[in-house]
Image 1 (cartoon, rainbow, N blue to C red):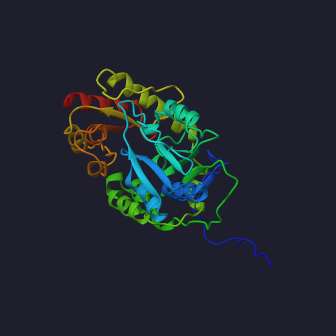
Image 2: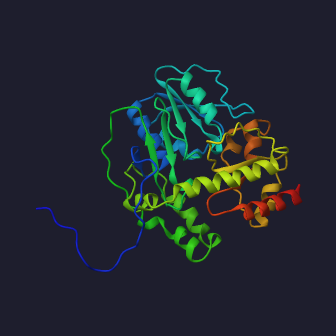
Image 3: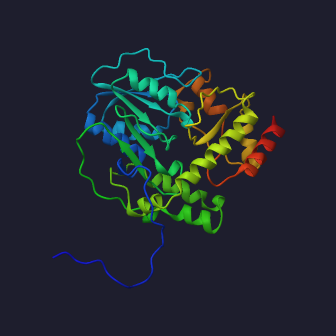
Length: 319
């Protein structure tokens, strides 16, 4: 006999009802597990990865004992494909910072076995013939969560994840401040290592359903446009940014490895993409230079143009 949901008791956390941004995609617990899902379904023998990527992507590849090879990028963040992608191989390409959709479109029209990493491009819709995955926590205040678009009718049978033990950094960020929650954030990242593929948790899905996506899009676009107008002439990274792109950060490439540390000292916190690249490449490589010198300026929905003005003022004072 089916047991009815209880009535009464204490009042739980109140979350606004709303629509998910990707209601038709497969909702999973992490981006790396979305990649594992693809690899399990497709059964590729070899995957080609960019040197400039996060090392967590190796987790499912090593788990499934799939051969992997690295490839380099040119100055436009386009892959240098000097190898053959056969029927049992695939190429993974990252939509870097959410501003490389033109390259994604071009690659998907030419390469059959391609996987698009849209972890930095949440709002870029998937292309039908390209398996694509997303990471929710790069864009929103959730402890986990990912989406997957896969052009196959095959599905894995999964249990649903639970996220109750991954919230301390988010709660401290609201109740105290982001700095106070950072240590918990690091611990949460560790807790996501080597997890089984599971469906997105109910709490993560509920938060995402209550998110004002249009507000997030508008804030990111306005903030990006302001910084781009201020830094276009000095930015060594030339972007083919269009009005349809919704970036994760503003990627400012400056030939000054000390700038990142100076900004952090002034409480403008800059992430490094990605420290593992130092071990994977040589100091003369383009990817090493990106990791060393790229300033990923925050532009998300927490901030407005007044915050962007502060960023510009501080950056220009340090140049």
